[in-house]
Length: 264
Image 1 (cartoon, rainbow, N blue to C red):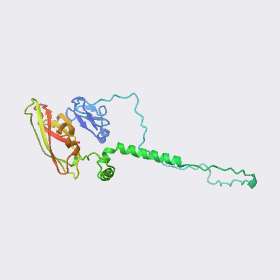
Image 2: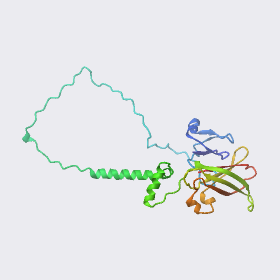
Image 3: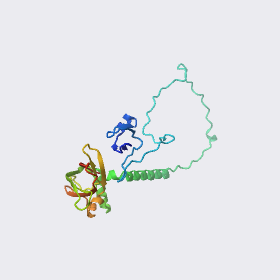
Image 4: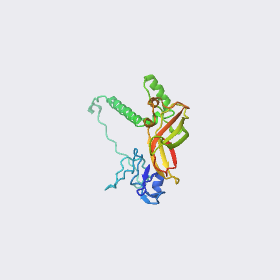
């Protein structure tokens, strides 16, 4: 989760432990201002470019929670409502009516198979919706993906390339002024795929900062924005292959002396 200081507009990544510790309040490490972290709390950063995170307005009434995650069972204490010396008296027996007095009624057989079929169809529909909602993680899962590849090979379909940014190694990087565009920079990097499978090119986030490691500018590039050949988007990076990436960015000024790469 992310939040933004309203004084200096610095964006911080914050976790649940830090939110609970400060009861929603925190002190900015850049300008030392104390601010409400819940006002601009968000799960994901918006697309570039952006200046401020969306501030949440306080509701008139607190939101109502409707989907419980856990409810501890109360301790069960049995309380005797009767005197323990009382003895339970057997109920008086009723005289059975003669056999000819009973009216025999024929009950039609109960058919439950339509309900069984309906419940099975609803269960399959729920499983399909869960699989569609978690399709990204299932496609990149190390155990599930081989089974999906073999099934898709028999059906004649094609799955998207796997995505594992942790197995991407940054071999080199460089930044220099743009030779033909004023007030612009060229940032280059060499990337290697250390995975044993071909994977898609990642989204690359470049952050420029000053000597105090304060963020000055940030830009996130999608693969189609930095790849010149569209065929590379389809084939991806082969196992052990390297790729040279070139990015053109605006020069944020002389205070930007450090830069950082992150892959998503």
